[in-house]
Length: 65
Image: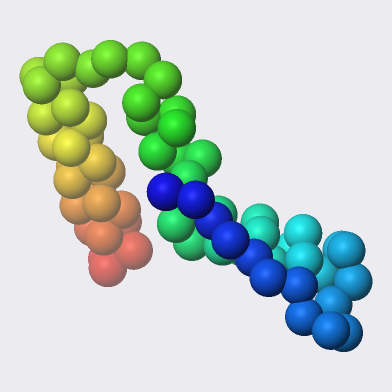
C-alpha cells in the first residue's frame, strides 16, 4: 500500500506535496494507521459500529424535525 505521486513538468514542490496529502486522505492511510495502532476486540468493534449508527439516527432526527 504505497502512494506514488509523479511530478509533472509544471509542478512545484508545494503542488506535489498537496497532491500527496490529497491522495493519502482519499485512501484513508492515516485513519487505517490509527485503527491498527491498538488491538480492539470484536465486541469493541461492534460497540463502535452501534454507536455510529445511533449517532447518525439521532442526527437525522434532529435535522428532519
